[in-house]
Image 1 (cartoon, rainbow, N blue to C red):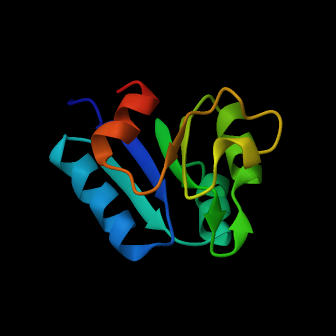
Image 2: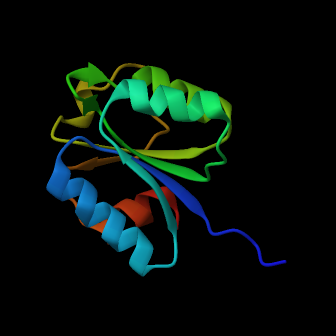
Length: 116
């Protein structure tokens, strides 16, 4: 039995960036879950119990804030990184330990922020 690939959730509503992240993850042998473009899709995925090892989270996903998802993921022990056009200072308190990459990003920057 072979071990499963490292699974990274991509929650991003900008199509080209989501595709860029997905391609970069796949090229490095990582399995992409998504990309998912709405908070509802991400919540449904978490409700399904699908295994995740990491998550790349757009702070503003389809006009909704991603922070409830980030809270759930952290409680599950899933490594997260925020990808956003927002400055880190605008993130709510309690997320100081979550890495933050400012758009535009490249996959190496995101993976380094995740410790991969």
